Length: 525
Image (cartoon, rainbow, N blue to C red):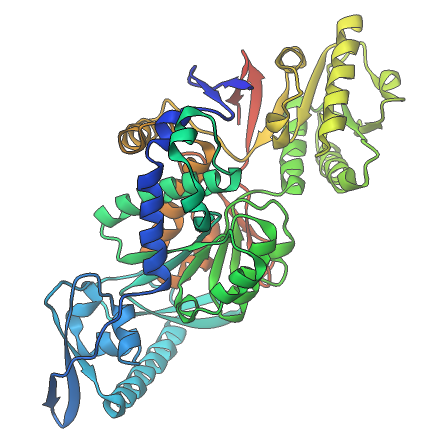
């Protein structure tokens, strides 16, 4: 089992940590999942009221709100929109309480209400266009928010009723296996919970803490949890559920095949969707409704190139060619970015030198620091390269600094002694400052609730939920267009979104630079 000394001096294991403590709560966690899963997929039945009232010639149902009912669920029962309920009940936009009486128009009256709302929306959009104002923020005292987003001279009116916010969360829970679990064996370490399910549980734990915190701050929304760990036929059936089309945001699934399916659904139904974990940027092409949190390796390579030139221009900069076709784009990205910046630098007239195992020694300098960059995702190649560079340094005493991508931190075969001797520097899209007040507060809250320490997936779940759910509460569905402006730091994730063009999605480029020092990675930028 590999251990890593973290920046705060504590030691955390890559796996096998606190299993007895964590899984003593397994029954509670899964019971909570089952409850939420059932509520998300099979809302409790709401009966139409038999009480009616006629006001100014219009006939209304008088609905008495019961515990757990929402504007969304009530609107479905009466076959009207949330807008119509709000337009006839001014206080409904501020939330519902048990015992509230709602006036809900009969079908004929509902059609008249709908036409009136559409008329008001068109008038408001026209007025906003004349003013050329900025997008309005969400205001809980208004019945609805009309937003005009200006992008590349295109004005798109977006109308979002203020009231319930519905977010779908797809996680690999595999709820069908609950009956097969032996909690006693898991607690004793004789049986392990499947890896994907463990990740799903940990991600949810973080989401739950964020959701609870936002609730205390007045978040008016609902989280619908769906199990993505299904066979193809069951998952396809899940995607036909009508309530999914009413979601304001979809988070997940965490993995590629299922995410592609949900992405197509989200695009067809004009729903914004978030990928918390996937690396590739292909999902962004032609999909402005998508945002992804994990920077691609190409983007990480660009940041490593910028840092290399910023810190080491004038030194001997070398880039390793793995000769692996999958690494070619990273190699070319580094050379293009670094050479462009070097040509603008007064510190050097050199360009990047490309080497292989065969040619490395002939390009090593005896008078300058050798900055060797390994832009590769091939773990075997990286391990071999680090070993050979280390042995060369031991024999020659040449000055060498090695730089790589975030995957360095995941390679079990890399010797910590080698990384220290080579002054290893890597890109990273995750970093937890254990000394910050916010982190200490989060750790205390998490430990009190779950009786163990959080993992990277717990941090990820918290950051994703706190950022997006809080953003929806504040900006409504203008959030997607405001992503590049919202530069924030979560517990683990730094949010810094970039959109290549108006027809593409948003990539998070919140990347830090970490140096391996005293057997831990410490952020240096």
